[in-house]
Length: 329
Image (cartoon, rainbow, N blue to C red; front, side, top):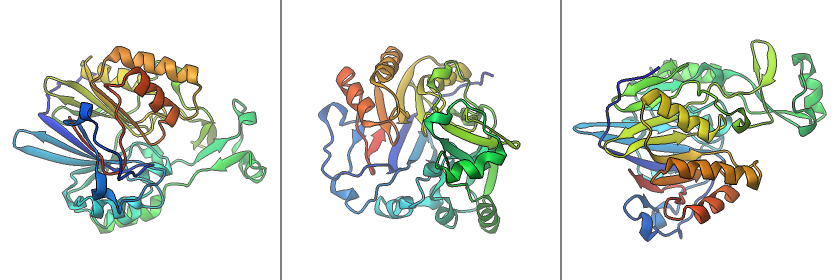
């Protein structure tokens, strides 16, 4: 699938929820025009295991604001929206990157703050039960009948499940629209959602996570994961990821394929490198360097080892971000 691809004038990202807050983090001289740290303005912000990013797209006279993910179950997003003076009634769309609780966790309190014009975009698989499996059971077939036993034996852990019934009721009460994304979709001029990401390298898939689908327990291949691609005029693609479970390299390559744009401008979000070895991390960074982006910013589940190694290998391209960080692209 290939789309007609326009370009937007500029994009501004604001980190609303992330794993870290830091009022002492200074804006680095090398990134002063692009990555601005919040300083004391974020002193009342909260951190949690989760991700939420405000995406503002300016294109001529047209301005759109998207919320990409809603953070975790502590719903720190509600506090942080207030502190950062972000009005949720200005969101045109809310995008759920995938069905893990650290990306949809704030949805219940957020729904009542939105206006009827707001559109939710996500893959229907966010409703499917998810599990974390112990190493000893990796690669083995698990029958649904064995789930309760394995949970008692602490070999299988069910992740918090998306509160589908409550969310549907609140959405109906607030006249919020739900639209499912199964394949690549153009949602505005120069702006695309990935749909199911094509897996070029299966080794990149996150291991140890299962999904119950159509009555069968299977390895999660993260077909619900949605990356956001934005083409910036004369700059190339911004690649925004929730966790990168489908593989950060797979995600970038798929964005290039569906848009026909090879130039990568910025790679931002969760890269899920926390469980990877240093050999795997260095291999990924080597490929990222070959894409030659102007900016790399790994958040949430990217991991300290990856960020430290990327900063060593690409010091003028790798930036830190915390709750309240603003990125101008």
